[in-house]
Image (tube, rainbow, N blue to C red):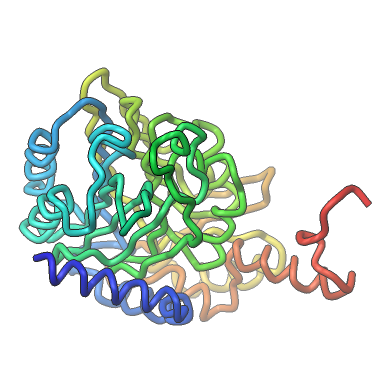
Length: 341
């Protein structure tokens, strides 16, 4: 087990250092959409969020075992769920080994935060296990909270915001205090994240809603506050489960839903809907924002792929292109200039 974990982690780090992943994201997601199981519409992802505090490894392993047996594509646990700084572990320590075995048993991804030590460094890490139980992505908290610098040795700051190409789509992570800093979320969007897992000690609320609204990815929370929340690509909160003990929330998200601005897209959209009335529908129209959402109507159809074929530009891409082209006219990137002048 430990050898496999180390090999998988090393392969992930090599891939991240060489930029492997984002360039192939579009093709990978087309393949995922094409391989959607019979009878399934869109690109469904069954997500389970566990929100709690004060539970043992054995108690939570039993919950993951139970929920995994019901069927899941991703199970998410809170930040420092074993107690902050109480148990520093390596990637082949007892927590990852226990959750790895359950990920493999139930053929599901698991997002498992740990207090991690790597040599003489201490890190607040989000660890993603794939369906075989291998460590495939490690995110080290970019903005640790102030108290994390008081432990000896202090927690080291993370330096990267990786996005992993899972078999259902592109997954990123942010942790707790990261909610306050927009640059990390922008980095995830730039790499094509479709779903962001946010383990935390607190709930953050409208801060997360703003990130989902601005970047058009789903955000799934797993907190110690006993509330599991999920935010839509439109920024809408679509799930809010609460418990004083252990909240278990289940939701199926369709990663094939696409969001678009009306600018330059109305003609292509109308043609698409006219020529494919049984394949794609406009699920939602947001009048004030002038956005609309497209989704597939039947199995074997990708709404986002059909939209691309008809020349529609997704909202995130439209904003990125607009920023780039307007910066060219200015002669310098406005986002990189500091100060009021």
